[in-house]
Each structure stands twice: as C-alpha cells, then as structure tokens.
Length: 195
Length: 426
Image: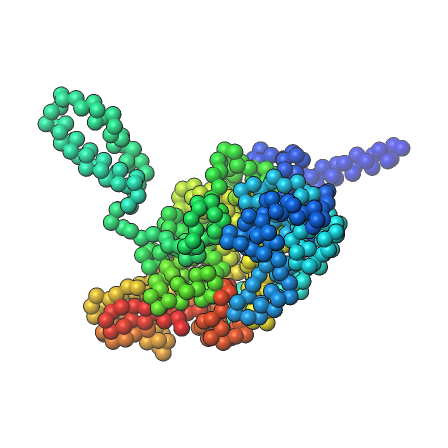
C-alpha cells in the first residue's frame, strides 16, 4: 500500500516534470478554448467521415429541399444554370478530361462524397451558409449523388454510409494515394521531371 | 475619377480660394462655407497618389453578363506589373482572385483564431494576443497557380498579341508580410505524434479551407497581420492571413480563423475539384504546392512603345517558390545569346527580385526575354520544355481551355520596327 502510494507520487512527479518541459513559453498569451467554442468553429468533415455529425437523408427527401433552396442557381435537376455550375456528371465528363475541353462537375470529377457534404454545409446556400440542418445537408448530398446515378433514390446517407460511397473519378488523381505526397516541396513540374 | 477624389479636388480648389479670401479679410466671417468645408487636416491623414497616376488592377475572369452585385461570379484582378518599380507591390494593387465572394467585413476585436485538433493544448487567440508574440517581417510573393496560364478563363487575354505584362503575369504580387511564425504557435499548442497535415480555414462566406502538409506549417508559414507596414487590406485577408511562402496562392488562406491539426488531407472543395491539374491522359495531379522559377520583363513589355532608338534599361521581376533567385539572364535576340542581368537588393527568399540589364535598340526587330535560376539550381523552362513536361506539344498549350497550372515558361516580347512591343509567347 505504502509502496504503491510512493510509486504514485513518483509517477505524478515524473508526469509534472514532463508537463513542465512542454509548458508553453509565452505565458498568458491566448487561452484554452471551451469545448463549445471548438464545436461551434469546427465545421470540417474528412474523407473517412471524421467530423460528420449525426443525422441522415435520402435523395427523395432532398428533392423538395433542392427545389426550394438550390434549383434557382443550379437548375431543377442540378444540371447547372446561369448562376450556379452544373453538379451532375459521370463517365461522359470523365472522358472529357482527356480533351481540350475538360468538364469538372461534382458527380463527374470530385473524388470524395464527403467533400460534397462538407462544402454544402460550409458554403451553401449562397449567403445563407449554416442555415441547413445536418440531415438536410445529407439529403441534398444524396440528391446530387442520385442525380449522377452514383447512389439510388432511397439510399440513406449518414456519417457511416457517406464515406463509403465510391465516386466515379476517385481513381483519376496522381499520385493515387495522397499518402504518397511525401515531398511537399516538389513542384508541379521541375526541369525535366514531373512528380 | 471616383466621387471621393473629385470631392477632394474641388475642395482643394475651393479651399485655396477660401484661404486667399481669408488673408484679405481676416475679420470677415464665412460661417456657411466653414461649416460645409471638410477639415483640411483630414485630407493629409491618409495619403493618396497623384491623380495623374492611373495604373489599376484589371479583371480577366470577368463575366460581362454579371449585373447583380450579389451574383456569385468568380473574378480575378491582375496587378499592373508593367507600371511597378522595385520589388514591392503596392497593397492597393496586389492581385485578387475571388471565388465568387466579396471580402467579409471582419472586426479584429471580434475575430478569433483557433488552433485545435491533434494538439496537447488547443488555443484561441485574439489579433491583439498574436501581436504580443515574437514577430517576423519577410518579403514574400504570393502567386496564383493559374498565373500566366495560356488556357483557362483568362487564356484569350493572356495569349493575345496585344497582351501587357499585366495580362500575361498579373496574378503575382510581393509584399512585406508581418506576423507570428506558425511554427511558434504550433509549438505552444504542442503538436501530437502522428499529425501530418493541417487544415487552414478562412472566415469568408464560403469558409474556404485548405489542407497543408505539417512540414510547411512547421517550416516558414506565417500567421500574418501586417502587410507593407500596415494591417492587411480587407481584400487580402484582414485581419489575419496564412502566408505559405512560395506555395500556390490557394494555400495562403485569407481571413484565417482556424487551424486544425490532422493526420490526413481533408479533401476540401478547392483542393479536390478546382486546383488539381488535368493532364492529357485525363488524370489530375493534385496536392501540388511549390511554384517553380519564373521571370518576366516588365519594361519594355507588351503594349508599350519605344519612342526612339538608343539606350533603354531592360527591367523585370524574377521569383521562385524554391528559394532565392540566384541568376537572371536576358536575351535581346530571341534566345540566341544571353547575358547576365544585375539583381537589385533586396534579393529575398521566395520573393520578387528586381533585375535589370542595359540595352541599346538599333531600330530593328528584336525579341526580348529573361530566364531565371533559383538557388536550388532550377532554371526557368522554355514553352517547348513546359509542353514536354506535360507530355504534350506546344499546340496543346495553345488550344487547351483548361488552366495550365504552374506555367512558368520564358516570356518573349517582340519589338517591332515602329517601336511597338507585343506578346510573342506563341
């Protein structure tokens, strides 16, 4: 008992010394944010689903929402209009990438479905960002994916299913794995060598 | 002339008349005029350039059909390189690329900057907090990866025979950036093992976000609050901007509000949909960062006219994302012979460097061009070499409608017998 107590004190001492070594050098500058502050500001969602909140939606649920909030810029079927770009796409757009007129759309170019959720959530509708609930963002994401025939109308999109959606152009990027972006100093093209 | 200027000039005229009157009739009160005239001291509090100097940014991704102020049209405003001297870009002429939004109206007293994610101690700062920390001031250029691309929305203007240096190379600018090294802030927060990337996010309407390898964040990135001796201009990120020296403009996140330390790129909209370079085989190269060596002669350059035969100083700018400019060579005979140009101080890392070379025009046709070498030994390529690097021919570069990212080919200007100077890229 006494020994374990001593051990505990020893560990605490060691720990505090370690903590001391990592003590910030600029005392009193900035402060620790509250959990609430972090949660309010942290809006990002990663490709493996990190950061995606609870909630769910289908393309069917997204259809009336899209008509009400998005169609005015992007067209009734996300085909694009004067103000907003086309969102749908597939093999034809992927084929266009080899031509002098490459077309990049959400359905035909974007490699990750989570990016669709993330972008709608952070930026859309224009000048009303932040007004959509997580489920509404899932439903709108599902609508765009279904209009591009990537998922079905009834497929439920949520934090688990969305990262698993395979986007058609997922393999259209080099290096194929971002983990291979090892040398961040490499240029687009150096003399004689393209990475 | 804008209404403000016109008011000011009228006032100056009236003010002078008023002063003359007052001398002759010191006791005669002019209450009505005194009430409406602005305080003369106000006029001198913030300087303006001469009204005779007209150099301005011009738009190249303009949508002529844009008619609503609120329409989400992306726009790019190019800096008038041909009118600038030295290596600093005036803040009011720094290029702008906007992805469809006006700058947000941020109050530095309200603005917060958060560092969180894979750190031992998440931290939140006010702008004043950051000003208490050790600061650095460094010259750095910021350049859009699409600058001088023959393809893309600005392609026609860039390729035109009548193109100016502004049309061809106006999406680069150089400033003295002041702020706190990001490495210092990350050290304060304590980066955890396994962290490999950061996600930087702005406070604009679209909350632009960009994934950046942590190596850069711990190297020379700056959380800047100052630009050329004053707070950063609103259109350049007021009150905070992440400066990533030598890297494509998109990484230099304006209106910086948050950095999350993470273990993978977050596949944000711009880095997956707009900024990868589409190659001829249909594959897109993504996560390109560092800009190669590039230079352009700004005088004489496209659209200018040599008044007479005789002596001229050839002057231009060179820069590289790889480091400092070590050498600039100039040719006046279409690349047959080259001679070293003089580099003007300061020659800073990842900054515009001014160069010059003497030249006497004999009245005959001439082709002027410059090529630079950075301190890694990388030499600026020719158009043919760039095409080869893309696995394409020069014809592809001429015809593609896609942005040719990081296009850093040598820029030739042709001087005609009548003294006119024109773009001779193709």
